[in-house]
Amino acid sequence: MAKGMFITLEGGEGAGKSSQVRMLGEALTEKGHDVLLTREPGGTMGAEAIRKLLVEGPGGRWDGLTEALLHTAARRDHLVNAVWPAIDAGKIVISDRFSDSTLAYQGYAYGVDKDALLALYKSAIGDFKPNLTLILDLPVQAGLRRAAQRGGKETRYEAMGKEFHERVREGFQAVAKADPARCKVIDGTNDIDTIHREIMAEVSRILP
Ligand code: TMP
Image: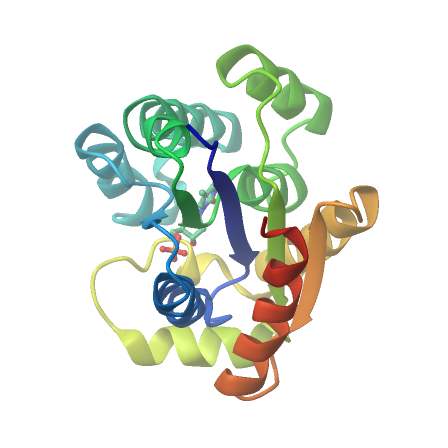
């Protein structure tokens, strides 16, 4: 059976990832692909339970390394119970966030040692990585404004302050620079349809 694919969307708060994941999923389904849309932290029952611990409650609830461990535990559960079986079944899996978020948030923004994060990834996940990562880049203030309009209980990271989110943005830019074959930066200030067209152009390049 043909092996599937793993595409991840990354970016700071309010970058528009969730809408783009949905639009990309619909477009690929229309073209006849078998698609699984998912997200991190989350995507399985166990990982959604861990998500609640991470995105709700007071900011100082965990230190950076503890957070990285929690995100990694959620990630392994997500891969074992959802992503890897779907890829083996030939699906195109599209995830709203993946491990680049750990490097950007826990590494660049919290200051957890990046080599330690890479070693953690290697021991929990191994050599697996996305076929393509689309990084939606947006000025921090604009993203935080959009995220605030969403409301809801998942405000723990949004409340970290502008400096924190500037470091997140720098982190994603550094990730993209370090792995240009896998990562494409998309201008998140464009309108939703323009962004979708750019994403489709990148995805078309890697489709069989
Ligand atoms: P969301 O707002 O995109 O649903 O993601 C939930 C939050 O989790 C978001 O503020 C970023 C954060 N996060 C990390 O800090 N590290 C990670 O590894 C992941 C996947 C998400």
